[in-house]
Image 1 (spheres, rainbow, N blue to C red):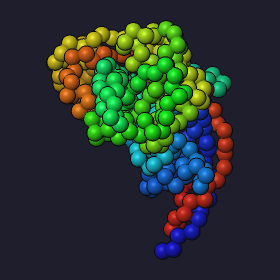
Image 2 (tube, rainbow, N blue to C red):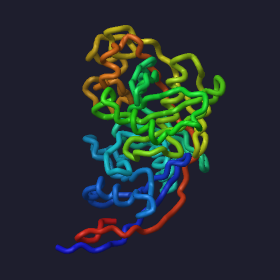
Image 3 (spheres, rainbow, N blue to C red):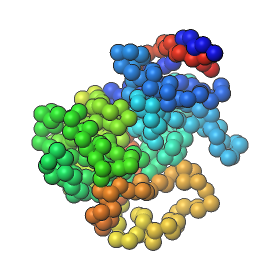
Image 4 (cartoon, helix red, strand yellow):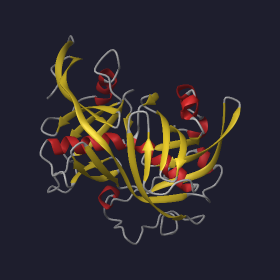
Amino acid sequence: MSKRRWPLPFLKYSGAGNDFIVLDARKVDPIGNPGSLAKALCRRGQSVGADGLIVIEASNAKVSEDSLPRMRLWNADGSPAEISGNGARCVARFLVDHGANPESVSFRTDIGLVTAQVTDDICRLQLPIRAVVFPNRRLRVEGRHLTGTYVEVGVPFFVCFHDNPDELAVRFLGRAIRNHPKLAPRGANVDFVRVDDEQRLFFRVFERGVEAETLSSGTGSLAAALASAATGKVASPVVCEARGAELIVRFRHVAQAIAGTDSVTNQPPGEPSADTNPDEPAEDQNVLDGSSNPPPLVTETGPNDRIEFVDLEIEGDAMPIYRGEALVQAARAPRR
């Protein structure tokens, strides 16, 4: 069957400079091959252009009464992503724009159930994860030893501190760190951070999946703040300035975990926490241990100095910026 170009309606949203193509698939059949669609639509200069593709689907939860929508995300290179802080804030704004309660909007993601509050163009997002920070990790990059902090915030980050990130070749350094063998198999996003004072920092970010520097990152701002807090440089709340906009990050430091334990309650690995139900899926409990399947960078140096944070929030602007139609090459018309 020959292929032709079909029009595909879409909305484009921006969250603090991260831009996303948003497709509402709640009332249609699932979109076929969304990874290829993301790769085709997100190419800047050749198509719509974006940092990623977000598809909002009807809930597939086992509980039939659950009508919460689900966010699914693909990076610009077509790879799936667990979460994007700015992308999730764009979803919250989209749902409010389409009738959801702005005082409390909830939806499902690959890391669990997230909630948000939307006031005009400002969205405040709560993430259901337990972030894990591993300070003082060393990599050898381009012949040099580099010390940084490994952070799991639903997605992995390697955070480097520098007095002047503006002078760094972020695209070159970011790619080298992102693909480092000690961060395999997932790789990592990379933050370059300057701490200005106890409540403020500046960062630049190289994002995997986009494979380039982006104007901002919600999870990147969180990773930058937590890496800084783990070494006593900042305290919540923290204003995180990127090239796209500012984000406010809030968090609570739990404790430094005891060696050989697996949670904020310092229980043996594999044991459920007292406040969780082992019969319920993790996303329904708003609990996720971000340290599962750590890379060699973490396992080779031991877990003794892992530091954990909860009550994670990201606040900043999220707004629609464009409505249009993209021409998609396919054998038949795409479902709308």
